[in-house]
Length: 329
Picture (spheres, rainbow, N blue to C red):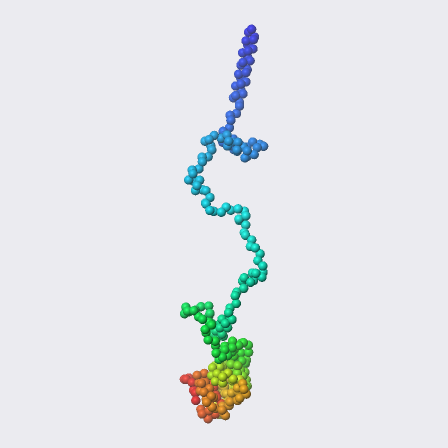
């Protein structure tokens, strides 16, 4: 009996000890927050996180946003949603080459307007006619503008002639530059001589060796006086003298003539396009007198029939450097 009681006591004691050992050695469960961050081998992070969030207490779950804040963060109304299709640049449809050229081709101007614009440009000064602005602020009827006269057209044509073969900076003075002329005679010679063959479209009977001062003055006189006086029919000037080293009026011992300095030229006749020849000696009529008198503003000296007895058969023109005004007789 005693043995049975002792056995029962021993068995009860051993069972209680075993239970105590099992309870004391068992690890405490981890907090839910730590379980969320722990991923067991073989499990995905998303699965573990989802399970932990489902078992997490309400205190660890984020609170819902206030309705006012949620409304402010909402996507603005009317703003288009950006998609991959919308982000791609649109591709223009191909256009036929003929259709594109036709659409870009400007409409032609009326023929009458084109003619008027061309006429205005032809009569404009050398700087050109400015058609892009209107300083007076008034509308300009180009069709109502008078076309240039025949004289203006001739002048413009000469002014716009090619510079090839021209001298002295004037397209209508044709010739060539030649080397400096020196002389043993004191006072003779030309620093910058040119050999001129034609002036303002009018040829010279012989090449005239002069300087640019007389060449330019003669050009202006022919273009503005002589040619209009002959109604545009003047084709040649008969040159009686140009550069020559001699005294005035061919007198021995006289001061050097302007011819000896390349600043003078003598004209003895005018030849027209119909073959008519007007000489100073035989045809000094009203027309030639008018041409001669009109030369005074262009030259420093003009001498002709009735001046001094030495110029009865020709016109003498020079650009002397004398002081005072022009000497016209």
